[in-house]
Amino acid sequence: MLKQICIRFLVVLSLAFIPLAAYGQDIETNGPVGSSVSVAALPANNGSVKCTADITSSGTIAGGKHVDAATTLHINTGQYQVGFKKPCANVTAAKGYARWVQPDDLSNGTTGARYCTTADRYTVPSAVYVACYDGNGSLADTSFFMFIAR
Image 1: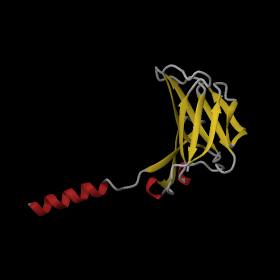
Image 2 (image 1 turned 180 degrees about the vertical axis):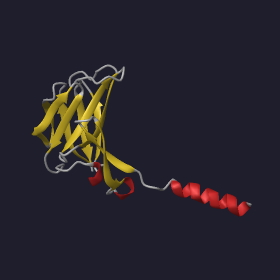
Image 3 (image 1 turned 30 degrees about the vertical axis):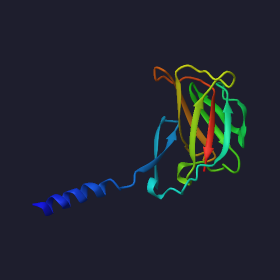
């Protein structure tokens, strides 16, 4: 009996170590695109910020470091593509890059209830897809800071 309990426990415990899949963003369908890369196989990230972007609510670049104007744009309400040059020329999760966004009005620091999410930009490895939402969970235009770490 004890042996069966131990075996069941080990099976359940081993399931916790199965790697999860990484996903990107398909803007055409606004849904995830599966990746063949598992999270367990991602390169290490030492947390050093390599690139930054200050993006206005209309999608223009207000500032930043290594931002690529040619691949940065406002896609639709609350949806942005932010592109980067070297050293952030391939900012996909599979390459070990961490991306985070801080909504900000780029002047006095207030935006109201807003939040943004990021994902790999489908077919554009040098860019990040950003979706921003208002307090009700609806897509909403907002300016933001973006940080890329590796």
